Image (cartoon, rainbow, N blue to C red; front, side, top):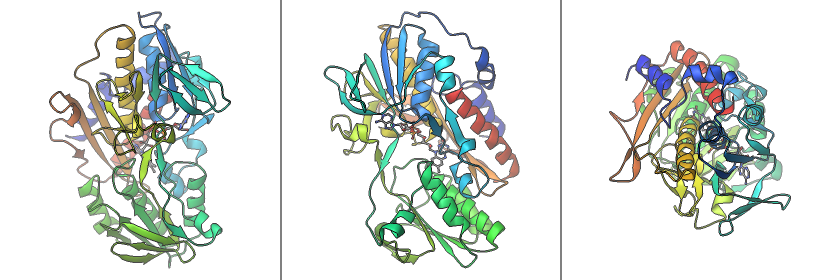
Length: 428
Ligand SMILES: Cc1cc2nc3c(=O)[nH]c(=O)nc-3n(C[C@H](O)[C@H](O)[C@H](O)COP(=O)(O)OP(=O)(O)OC[C@H]3O[C@@H](n4cnc5c(N)ncnc54)[C@H](O)[C@@H]3O)c2cc1C
């Protein structure tokens, strides 16, 4: 796929899972909300991230006034993980990556409750909030993102506190940024990558590249060691292999490196392929679905870690409960763009179900990801998925994953547009 085809795809992908056309996003200020479309019911959405915010918006936009949507999210502001690697290098601030829920409530009529859900009673169909109040639902959508396993670590509490993942943008991002800023050209940055599945398959390799780039540009030296628990690079193999060998020769990539322990006092990471020492240890632990899902074994029915779903509607093993975004086990990657796409398939399905209609039997979704390689260049990947009735899964169409044929400034410029379009489609 050529870059122009990819951009055309982004621009025309309103069909269900894909992003709304640029024109729709730009005209969102004048959007006309439908009246009653025949869909009636109470939908509670847990989690106002990339998936939950999108589903809340599109349930109202497509379902109309009969669909009463309540979004429960503890934080008044969402901080985007996407581009948070650029916070580490000082190219962005967390404030620039912060999004509020004003448009969701004022433009689309979603009710926002700034609390968290502590329990789900799927027999009586109600959720309990952290103030002990209850919220009944006809359909529940859960989009809590991921939780992280504890890593085997020793050392003083202060030393352990410095070993962060920064894989959920926020205070850990600031901590890691401070530690990277304090590095000298004689220092090594160690990044550990968990076994898949983890959120944003290209994300760790992107981080290795932008940190390596920063160390060369700003510190005039410094090394990055990538300890990957997987047998090889998990996304954009050609571009990252090229970048590690030719653009960032200060990166050492080590596959099959499962962590056995971390000594935070000395910055030593012991792995299945040896011990590695660094000034800064950025350890990304294995992931699982958010706690509200793993608390309920019937929901976390994929290895006790992820929620199995029917990808025609994202309904889980428990009737009337849908799971979208990183917490769902599907054949699609755990990424913000696909979370937005899954949310639209789910919103469309719920609107049909509330009308007593059948859901779309052949949904399509699109995953796209731009990756900064330096502060001025980027690469990208894209996949279009279509429902496969034989396996009951979403399978890549055409040639599968397409990588950009180069790493360049044009891609970096387009990346900025892609990001603002995705975030506008989610939060505006
Ligand atoms: C460094 C990095 C770079 C990335 N880059 C990209 C990229 O370039 N492209 C891309 O597509 N993706 C990227 N991603 C991945 C992307 O950020 C995630 O896949 C995406 O955020 C998943 O969306 P989600 O809605 O499932 O989870 P989240 O966005 O994490 O949202 C979950 C929300 O649920 C809330 N929540 C959790 N539990 C509860 C509860 N009990 N009650 C109420 N609310 C709750 C949380 O507060 C949170 O707001 C990147 C990730 C990282 C870490």
